Each structure stands twice: as C-alpha cells, then as structure tokens.
Length: 351
Ligand code: ATP
Image 1 (tube, rainbow, N blue to C red):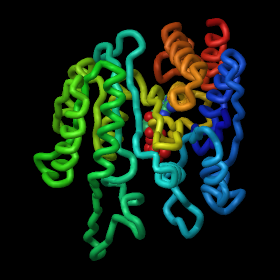
Image 2 (tube, rainbow, N blue to C red; image 1 turned 90 degrees about the horizontal axis):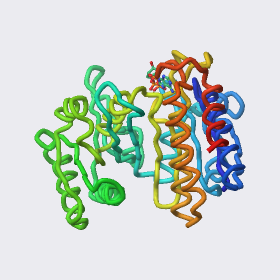
Image 3 (cartoon, rainbow, N blue to C red; image 1 turned 135 degrees about the vertical axis):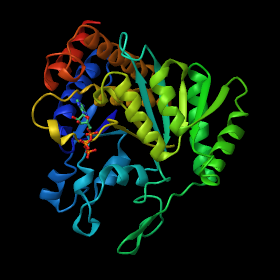
Image 4 (cartoon, helix red, strand yellow; image 1 turned 120 degrees about the vertical axis):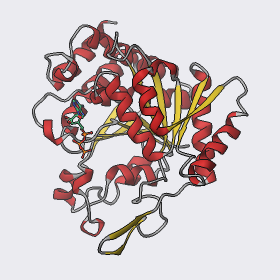
C-alpha cells in the first residue's frame, strides 16, 4: 500500500512522526508492505515552493492508495493568489472526499459515562464558504459593515452522506440519529432531514431518530451512550465531533477519515494546536487512529483482510496504551508524543 504523508504545521510534524513509527511496525507485523512517501505541505511547502500545496502534489496523491494529512495552520492561509491554499479544503474538494467519519469512544470510564459513537459529517458544502461555490467565494461583503455568508445544501450531497451514514450504522448498532436545525433553516436543513429519512427507509433494519443541533449538545453531554451513528451537515458535524472527541477524554483522541468513492484521507479531527506545538506533548492518538481507519478502508476496498486486521490491532494497541497510562498529559499520562507513539508500536509488536 502506497501512502502519501503530509506532516503539516504546528503539532503536525510531531504527531505524524509518531504515527509513521506505528505504521512501520504494523507493516512489519502484518506484512502490509507499506510505502510511506513524505512531502511538504503548509508553511514548509510555502517556503520551499511558494505554495502551501505545490503543483503536482495532487497527481502524486491521486496515484497513491491513501493520504495522511497532518493538521495545517488553516488560519494563516488567507490569500490563494500568494499560494496560501487551505490544504484540508484542497484535498477534500479535489478528491471529492464527501464523508468525514469521526468516531469517538471512551477508553475505560470517562467523565460522562462510557460511549462509542461515530459522527458522519458532510464534507463538501454547507456553511464552508471557501468550498461551496464552483467559482468565487461564498462570503460577500455587501457594505463595509455587512457580510453575507452563503450555505449551500444539495440533494446529491444529502443523499450520498445519508447513504454513507446508513451503511455504517448497518455495520454497527443499527441506530442512526439525524442532527439538524430544520425548525429554523427550514429549506436547507428541512431538505437534509427529509432526504436522510427517505434514504434510511431503504435500510429497514435501522432505528432512526432526529435531534435539533442545539438540543444535541445537551444530549451528547448528558447521555452520549444513547448514540451510535450521527449524521450532520458540514459545520454542525464539525462542531459536534469536537465535542464528542473531548467528551471521550481529549480532542487529541479525535481521529477521522475523509472518504470519497475513490480516495481516502486520514486526518486528525483537531487543528494544528499552535499553543502546544514543538513541546512534545501533543497526543498522537488522533492521527494514529485516523490512519487505522485508512488501513481498514483500504482493506475493505481491496479485499485484503490483513489491512483490516492491522487496523483493529492498532486501535487495540492505542486502547491498551491509554489503559496502562502510557499516554500524553492531556489524558493524564506522562509520556511525550514520540514516546506514546513508541508505546503503541511496542504493544503492536507484543500482541
Ligand atoms: P487551528 O487554528 O489549526 O484549528 P486551534 O488551536 O485553534 O488550531 P485546535 O488545534 O483544534 O485548534 O486545538 C484546540 C485545543 O485543543 C488547543 O488548546 C490544543 O492545545 C488542544 N489540542 C488539540 N489537539 C491536541 C492534541 N493532539 N493533543 C493534545 N491537545 C490537543
């Protein structure tokens, strides 16, 4: 399996190095024959090539079996004419990675009780003004003091994200929750809700309910165990999945996979965390777990079972490292980023 690795900014290079170590061990242990090809992205690429994503990188990624994107300094990248492209948006859009799969689970207890859920977030439209237009930008300054931000919702995108969520729920506890704000965004979220219900009728084994996004914040904190698969539009899903990651113990546990029909990109759910960058304290579990999702995706697609076996083993090794306190300070451990990666790799080796 050929994987392109883009370390990114802030804590990106640290968590990517820890993740690559785990992958190399997994490759030896499960004969995955992984080839990791690293390229610069973000600030490193801007300095070297004059663009945060250099020309030609997309073709390299298209030719590979998977992509790992470390967090990038999205907030710094404002002017595309100066090469400041948002790498996350760029790959999601150009590879049409329409489903963002964000699992969150507890590892022994948890302040809000044990739970195991997945947020399935639409990834290509919604309130993300920098990607919801064919040309131009979805935010307009009408006068110096008036800004209009456009939110795009389409039938096609609602249908495909609903199918992705239903298929996932069928493999899990068969419970789908649709999160929306159809009482206010009557047309956009109304259509999203209707389509999700309509698509779910094609999966009669599923139990389906829906919750307003604001009420969802209370339900997620009060009783996260009641949820299995949650489907949401882009921004609601983004916000909700940061909450569920934090409820599981730390934002640093939030793994995610961006999936389309032909490509997939592993990416931590969090950002580049400049406040802790370069200090060897960032939790690498987010990217390690994201990469496990990528291996599982490849295994399912190619029919090569050893990739799914490796993915499960990585998840178990992360769970064991956390249970034994071999973890970073955000979840109560004392290890640095690289040491936690090495602990996970060690557990993989000994399983
Ligand atoms: P960006 O602008 O790139 O989104 P940010 O700092 O605004 O960066 P996040 O990177 O998502 O947002 O971080 C939010 C908070 O969560 C920060 O205080 C950070 O320290 C913490 N955090 C994020 N990722 C991790 C991690 N892997 N391990 C530990 N703490 C983390």
